[in-house]
Image (cartoon, rainbow, N blue to C red):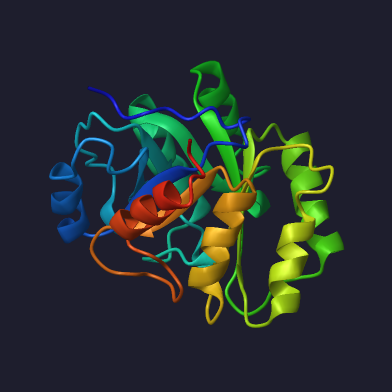
Length: 226
């Protein structure tokens, strides 16, 4: 049975994404219980293109080195990986900064019914709301289906800036904090409408992450996905 494919425009739903970024995480993904996660994210910058078959829908990404990508992949290498993985994907995650340079991947994804996640990561701070709104606007103009924003949340003001993004946003958002307020803010954002919520399967790759199992339990407990 396939995993639940969440309607990304339904803000009452909060999908849990299990991050597959190591051989151990691959093994963990194969043993997930039914309903354990809604999507799996394949980190091609960690693992290459040998993606296993799964009854759970795949999100694929080959992360830019400046946004947490491993192995210093060039744009050409990332393009090759993403194009080779598209037949396995339900969604493809491309950094907002890379949408123009990888426009052929965007076009191929759209032609094959694969949704586009435009992502933005800042591991040092939470930028101004105006800066983040500009990221969202450009992502929409580039054909994104959803915008994912992950920033370092150290103060309540950082969290407030991210919450402000839901006011009159033109696209569904996946919002998450990293750092000191990461774990608490992720539950808040899920409750406020974050459509994709990421958890680790083997070990955290940034501070402030829940495990996918914990995240599923907590999101269910607070009634976000009912």
